[in-house]
Length: 238
Image 1: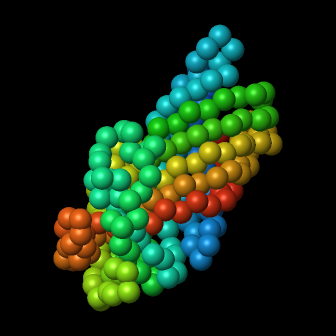
Image 2 (image 1 turned 120 degrees about the vertical axis):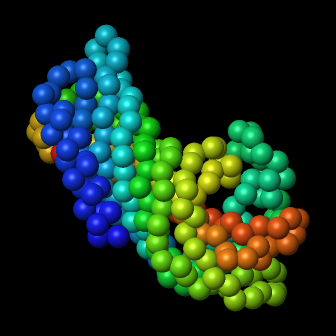
């Protein structure tokens, strides 16, 4: 893990150094964020490269990279696949209610997931000091130690082992696979280099059990925890 984290920092630093020639057509920055939820939290390090558009160059969009590390305590991971939770797949599952009878859980006492993903970013500059932005993970990979858990189906259950889902991809709502982070935030710029941010984070983390412990309405080994949390951080403009 230490080696991957070091490589991530060097990669972000290299990308930033490559773009130190500042112009009004680009916005490049790195930020460090901390999010706190109910008995869980995250830290994240990200690099953003946005292209400013429009006559006044106030709106921007672009790509980036983010490393997120999540830790929790006594978290219930619920059935993940959309075909089970909603009875269907496709983009409109976002508007479909869950089928409660189809959803089981896996209790993991100390989940810990690390994710490294490509991000899509949008933002708007109200003025040189105030900025609002949204970002979401698109694709990448996750890693972490295997965990012991307890599969729960109504009043019954069984012990099981679970591993982090390694591949991450954004596909809309419960169609998503793996672990994905997103933020909606506002940022205040102290000067041309330093700023602070605050907002909301929404994080998915996913584990796979070593056997398909869920049998109804179909076999399943994927379970997901959804984390809404307050996020705050600092940013550095290149």
